Length: 500
Ligand code: MCA
Ligand code: AMP
Image (cartoon, rainbow, N blue to C red):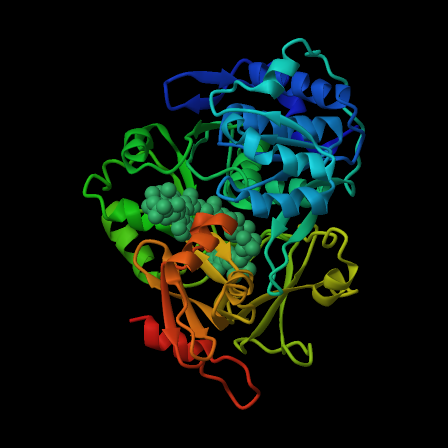
C-alpha cells in the first residue's frame, strides 16, 4: 500500500458507480464522481506548491466538496485542519498562525474578513461555498482527474484538530493515518457496518464525531450517507425511513423525542442509533426505547483519541455507561494525584492507550508530556470507574469543561476575555443544566471597586471575539466569588446557585 488511509477509505472505491452521498435535494453522488473531484482537488493543492506534510485549513459549510477537500488532503499527503464555522476571525487567526497552514479555504462571503489573517500568516486564501462554487473549485476545473496518490505511512500525520485547553490556549492534536484508520476499522466491525448501510448524517464535519467517526466508518464499510447540511427536525423525520443508522449528540435524540412524529413506525427501518460527544441521560435512553423499541448505543471518545469505548452491538447496552473498551484500547483508572492504578469500581482518572491515541500536541512538547505518559497512556481529564463487567462509567471531569449541544467550551478562554473588559476585576464561567443543549454557559463577574460594568459593551466584546456557542447566555455581577481555603474559586457553589 502506498497510502493506507487513502487506499482503504477512498482508493478502493475508484471506478465504483454505486451511490455514496444522497443529498437533500434528491441528487446522489457516486464514489467514482466523488473521487474524480478528490483527484482534481489533490492536483490543485500540489499544483499550488504545497508539499507533503503541509497543513490545509478549511472553514466552510458542510458540502460534498468540503468532504472532497479532506479526501484530497489524504491523497496528496497533506495535513487536514477543519475549523468550526462558528469561529470568529479572532479565533481563526490563532489556528492559521499556530498551524502554519499553507492554504486556507473559507466561504466566499467571509473572504474579505479573513484575507488579512491569511496574509499575515503567509497562507494562500481560497474559497468554497456550500453549493460547490468558489475560487478553489474554479482552480480545480482544469486539474488532472488522474492524480497519483502520494505515498504515506501509518505513522505520518493526517490531520490536525484543535481542542481548547484548560489554560485557554487551543492545542492542535496531531492525528496519524494509523490513529484514524485503526479506529474506523474497529468501529465499523464493532457496530456491524456493511455496504448495505445508509447513515443519516446531520453532524458537522469539522469535528471528530461527524468526520472521522461518521464518514470514515461508512467509507471503511463501503456504505452510503444521507448527507444533510445540519440537523433539521423536519428533514430528519423525512429521511429516517431511508436510513439504516444514525449518529448524533444527545441533543439530536432529545429533540427527536420531543416530536410526536418520532415513533416505532418511523424508525422501523433503522438498525442502529449511536450517541456520543456528551453524556446521554439514562432517562433519554429509557424514553427512547419506550418510544421506538431501539436501545441507543452510547460510546465515548475524544479529539485526541478518537473513540475509546462503546456499548456492545450485541449484548447489554447499559444506560448511563459508555460501554466497554474497544478492541485494541487499554483503559485504566488511576489516582489523579499519584497515578497509581485503582481497583474495580474505584473512581479516578480515566487513562487509555492504543493505536487510536494521538502522537502529541502540535508544537507543544511540554503540554504533550503533561498529558501523554511515556508508557503511552493518555490522561483524559475525565473521571470514572470500571465496573465488574468491564463497563466504563464517566462520573465527572477533572478538567474545567462545559459541553453544550456536543460542543466543548473551556471556561478559561471566556474568563480571560471577560477579565480584560473595562471595570471587571475577575470572573468565573460555569455550565448550568439546559433542557436542549445539556449545559449552557453563564458568566459571573466581579466589578472593580466602585465601578459599574457595562454589560452590553461586554456582550458586544464577546460577540466580536468568540464563537456564538461559547457566549454566556447570562451575565451576573456579584460582590465576590466564593473561594476555598486554597483560594480556588468554588464553581460548584456557583453552579448550585445559578443552576436553578
Ligand atoms: C448552536 N448554538 C449553540 C449550539 N449550537 N449554542 C450552544 N451550544 C451549541 N451546541 C446557538 C446558535 O448559534 C443559535 O444562536 C442558538 O444557539 C440556537 O440555535 P439552534 O438553531 O437551536 O441550534 P442548532 O443550529 O439547531 O444547533 C444545535 C445542534 C448543533 C444541532 C445541537 O450544535 C450541533 O450540530 N451540534 C453537534 C456538535 C458536534 O458535532 N460535536 C462533536 C464534537 P442564536 O441565539 O444567535 O440564534 S467531537 C467530540 O466531542 C468527541 C470527539 C466525541 O466524542 O464525539
Ligand atoms: P472533545 O474535546 O471534543 O474531543 O470532547 C471530548 C470530551 O467529551 C471527553 O473528554 C468527554 O468529557 C466528553 N464525552 C465524549 N463522549 C462522551 C460520552 N458518551 N459521555 C460523556 N462524556 C463524553
